[in-house]
Image (cartoon, rainbow, N blue to C red):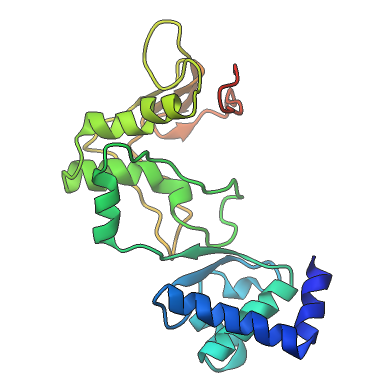
Length: 229
C-alpha cells in the first residue's frame, strides 16, 4: 500500500487530486488548517510526537502554511504513517451528547506501551473524567445514570451475556470507589498518567486493582457481540 501511495505522489496529476481533496475536506469541516490534529506516535521522527500538524510543519519545514502542512502529512504517510489525536468537538456539543439518555461512555483508545508516544488522554482517564468532571464537579449527570451508561446499557446494547449488572449468577466485574476521590490526570500534553481514586477493581471475580495499584492479575477476556464468554 505504501508503494502505491508513493507512486501516486510521484504522479503530478494524482498528487494534485490528493491535495485538492485534502483541502476540500478541511473546507467541508469548516477548518482553515490542521491545527486540530496532533501527532500521537510517529516512529520515523518521535521528536514530532505531541505537536500539532501546524507546529510540526514549522519545525520540519520552517513554514506552516496549509501547503506546508499537507506536504508534511504526505511525508508522514510515506514514512510509515502515524497515529493521531484530534480536537473535533467543543465542550458545549460534548455536554449535549452526554445529556442524551442513550449515550454510552467508553473509549476506542488502543492498547499501547506506557510512556510511548503522546496518545489521546482518554486511554488513561476516560471514565474517571466522566465521574469527576461531569458527575461530581459539574453535576451534569446523576451518579447512578452515569454508572448505568458505563455498565448495563452497553452490556445490553451489545448483548454481552451476564455482564454489566451486580446480581447472582453474573460475572463479578466490580469497581469500588469514593466519588470524592476519583480524578483523571492525563492531559493532551502529558497523557501518561493513570486515574486515581478507583480503589478496588475486580474482573471476573478476581482482584486486579487494590488501593489504586495493579495486582498483576490478568483474568480478563475478550467479549464479543452475543457470544458466550
